[in-house]
Image 1 (cartoon, one colour):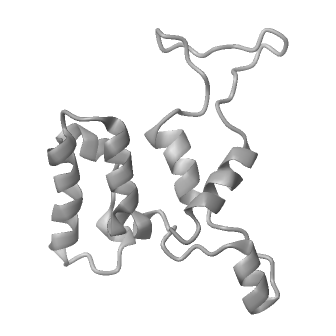
Image 2 (image 1 turned 90 degrees about the horizontal axis):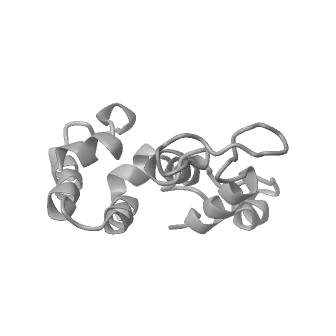
Length: 130
């Protein structure tokens, strides 16, 4: 449980009510309940947790259409949580071999990326209003 809490971190510095410990206890209980379970279930519970929604700023994210109708401005959904899920919590930035070394594109000699910015934008739209 402790190791999982070091990967899926929330910080009281980014939260307004750092003296409210109940939310942090609830958050860390996710890892205690799922320490020997499925990582997908952990990501699901972390995603539904209010601390993570505040920490990674997807709590008040709004769709482009909604903001355009309300303000006449085009504002894109917050991409922070979508990027964190892809980059830090799941697949990483580059494809890896089974031994952990980077897969290299034979034509360019560069590492093969696991996702593009279009993927991030699509995931951000999915998290909007969540």
